Image (cartoon, rainbow, N blue to C red):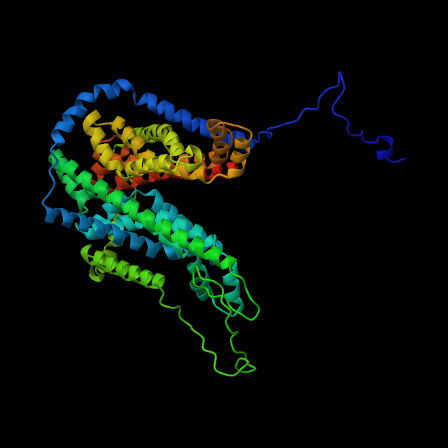
Length: 594
């Protein structure tokens, strides 16, 4: 007799339910916690606890803000009325800034495309090339742009070339990473078809990979253009021409009327650039999505080819001639090899010509030339030798203490940003508030906050609350609302609507739907955005020390001023180690909660 026959399985209970006195079976509604999940939750709790501890240690409270109220009133009286430069001088500063930003963004794209192709799994020639390219991208992202500006200043001196190189090389860290991700997400079908026809690797990349990734490449470049415009204000404090340099000069001479006027101009410029580039990105991605949907919906008739004009309909067209001879019925088949000059193609060509003209004009205004590049290449190695080997300059203890303060500023600023961005992001999500007008209003508020450079906020808080870490934490906290609020709103809107509709069908109220269906599904993405914001704030805290907002940035600027470049290298390595630690934590947590 088999084991199954000796111990037959119990028959499942039948009928309406267990009888009196029977024990109900326990059903588990939550998944068992795993070691990785508990570890990730512990790490997040430690980060939040660190933010609370930093908030308390820096004495960020109502009393501190109340004590600074008189300073705020005094500062406001010293800034009004605003003193704008003459129109000609102001337009020249704006054009100088835009030229540097545009040239730097183009440089980052030129450098990022080959790096991304080497870093992407589907286009990299080998694991070694992929590791090296990924390392270069991470290094460019971790080193602040002001450090690249200090090194470029040694090579190129005063002028726009210093800003172009500093912003362009630092931008490779973000642009290269996103480009590599876009290349990895392309469809392998077109590339396989080209490979089957005997096309080489370069032909496959230019004919199948890059055309698919082009919309993402353009959208990333436009997004980086906005970031570089805000970052250009920081580079003015290390000698880069433009609005940032004029702003630093006004602050140094305590001319707050001129400084705040320039800050308002920079704010409006950032807001306009963010609005225009955002509209272009949305239009570009919408056109691509519409074209893909229309191509999927076109019918295919036997013996006919699709008319691939976006938005068009499938038209029966004669099959191409084969080796057997011309098509039936005689005559010569005419095949059109170029698309027709439709209104859309004319509009696209016009924008392309204007973009090329803008890039060329920006390069000329920034002072880019082959002689300048050749001179910079010749002095690169001697300049690199000035920064090596690293040294402390006898202030090693002070550097560690100031690095600790920088970490406190980043933690406290991220906590403030989280507290403010969560409700604002929820109110900006259409599926949460249910009113498009309310969502658009709070989207506009987030956009306005995001348009204000953190440096301008730091300057205001330094004047109001005084020199030190408090002003840096407040500046980062308010500045974090722009990016973190947008990311939170996007994550909430991208959640699957099915669970929310199921709760609505049961009669659940709006707040019950939010906490029961929307937030739990968006929470992993929100956690990833929070850790990314901490990474960004750590680098921003280093930069804000330049204007007296506390932390190791002040040591960095002083070392550059007295030509102690080994100390600059030491500061960079310390910040780099901390940034890589936080980035590794973010990658691990996102992988656990994925």
